Length: 148
Length: 148
Image (cartoon, rainbow over all chains, first blue to last red; front, side, top):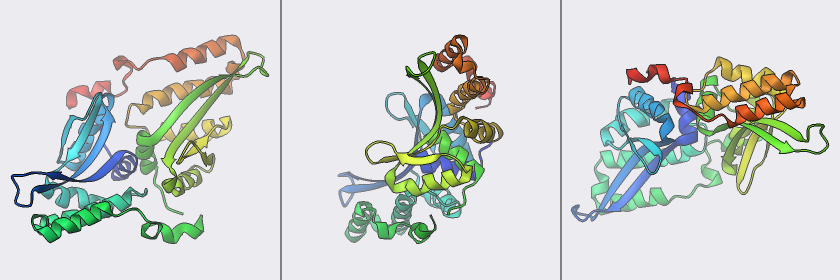
């Protein structure tokens, strides 16, 4: 196994990671919709070893075929997301504007932990968070702009 | 300015960086060809600040428009490549198989420092290095395979 450092993980995720909030139809659920947040890193299959190293670093998630010659590391389990993934990126902040997606992701995870996604108002709230567009005002690095 | 750590740079470059060896026609040169190695990181323009931070980290290179809504950080100067970029990634090793590209890149930089690219044999050698295909046997992580 390769030793990965926290800052390497942050850099790699700033480049290749994705904090995705899926909302899909599911008629077996009361509201008819399922909220599926996932943390994903996609790589060419030749670097699958790296994905296994990341899995080992976090101690959760799975490595799966993505599409074509792509593989992915994926965390979908709500407990793993809220207890491992979210605290990690709260401690080791992303440097790119992927941070904006991460902050939206955190809001959704928090609502889901409170089971709000199972109520109509909660689902509407999650849809709104997901739809929020990136605005210059919400740029977390805005205050540093003058220094460049 | 944002403080970037070496391992963050390595992780980000493992994801987004490119060690490119360009060989293009140039009739003003004796051999008719120009060898142009470059280290490049392309990003969406919304993260251009990050590219300026990387430029400041290395203390060399330029930030330029790439294509469409993409910007890039780029180092082409042979002295900067051989004195700054190459030593950095020799000290802080890449974790992905981009390392294979980096090793080819180093070989070309070394030949260019010895002015070998200005002689026919040197140019042929550089073409060969550039054309080398990734082989499992040249996988620098191969020996660790059994541990997974």
